[in-house]
Length: 164
Image: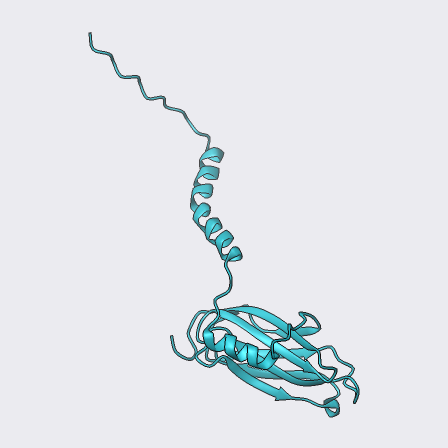
């Protein structure tokens, strides 16, 4: 006698269980992508690495005392506003000499350099920049004491500004 196949078991889900299961299924790829994004090393062009090494002279910048106001999401990469403020007494003995702006994936990594002196009274600059695509913006500040400060901000660009 032939063996009869087992019947499939049918279970009834509550509306809540169904919605929770559907949400989990829909969100799992997004959560996996977000988790992998956090563990990835940021992409940096060869030109950026060369410019960074040239400006720092092999020294390791300290990541503090720089406030960078830069949008996390730039609707248009052609016109990205940036404001940089460095905490400094701006005296003859202790002041910010130079502020550099670098981009990790632009065709030209060195975006701008601003020279400051104690006459400025406040170490603050405002400008606009072009960003080719989603990338990190690195700000370096050279102090008269020889110390170098650094800040890194990730900017997502929705429309490319200078190529790509």
